[in-house]
Length: 118
Image (cartoon, rainbow, N blue to C red; front, top):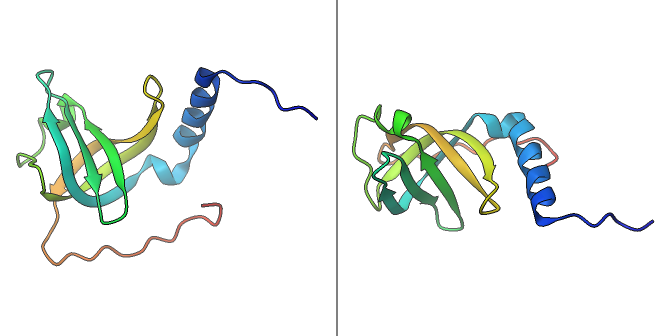
């Protein structure tokens, strides 16, 4: 059986649909260090969260950024709450940050129990 030929847009839309329907990815809490921080004139915040092995692109829309009780900075350790989705135009997954707080020093995140399919 020959595989269907899909466009880049079709593959990306399919992946977005999978991520947007995944229950685990709809309410995630991620701890990491802020890097590549940009505060856009629109009020949106663009940054990555990184640890020693990976990084995750993030966006915090103006509405949510205005409710933060601190000013995010490069190198700051934070805990971000939100959902994972795909930004289709760029074809990359990202965390939509709905709430964020500074990480407590000495905080060691527990290892989550993820579904066996991951």
